[in-house]
Structures are given as C-alpha cells and as structure tokens.
Length: 185
Image 1: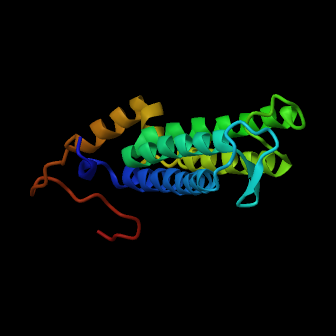
Image 2: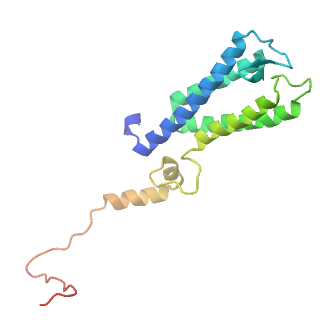
Image 3: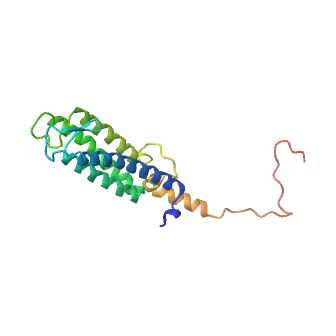
C-alpha cells in the first residue's frame, strides 16, 4: 500500500508520530553532539556540565545512538514510529529510575545527576506520549487505524453494509401512497 492510499486518519497519526520522534531525536542529537564537541572524558562518573545537564562521552554516544533510532522511526512513520517511541520513552523512564539508584556511586557510568534523572523522566514521558497519541485510549474514533485493527469484525460488517445494494420497492400506479398523519384523502 502506498502512503497516498492510506486513509486520512492514518496519515494524520503518522505525521504526529513522525514529528514526535524527530523532535526528540534532534534534542538528543544536539545534547550528544555538544558533549562530544566539548571533549568530555568517556567514562567519567562525575561528569561535566553540558546544556544544563551532567554528561560524559559515553552518555553523549548513547544519546546520539538513541537519536539515530528515533530518526529512523521518524523516517519510517506510522505504526513503526509509534511503537519505537513508546519503547524508547519507556526505556528513558526506566533509565531514570536505574540512574536514580546509582547516583553518587562508582556504578554511575553515565555520570547522571538529579537534573539528568528528571530530564530522563520528562523526556521519556514526552517520547512515549507522542507514540501513544491516537493509539492508546478507550475512546478512539472508528476511523482510527488502531481501532480498526482491534475490531476487524466491526470493520467487515461496516464494509459489507456499505457495499450492499439496498432494496428499492417498486413504484408504480398500483402502489398506493401510504397515508401520512394529517393527510385527507
């Protein structure tokens, strides 16, 4: 199926999923590039300040790698972009919890500090929200592609009903007009 053959609702959702993945990818790419440009030590556990956050070379590389995944999802669009952004957003939130536990320890390989943890939570929720938009809800409209995939029997019934030719009664001189209220006749 060509992208132009998709229903309008599919294209609208795909644009939102693409936009969310692309926007967050650019944000992470900028952070990673700034970290690498500053020449941060690769495995420093205390980190240096980059764009208001703490970072090291490893975190910069991880940020650029994540940005590449999100940019690929943005290029693919549709269900792939939605799924990837939900997974990446969930991983960001989990990373926030893990790195919160690792603060002030020698196992803090990504040089996280509390602002990084908060950024991880906020960014994870933002990325996941872009992916869930129009996909996860109790009240999706019936033209939504995810609703259609979850209710194939309703779609099949609607298609069958729409393509059926309604029976038209024969109209002729022998057919009497039905009496309407208020008719005199």
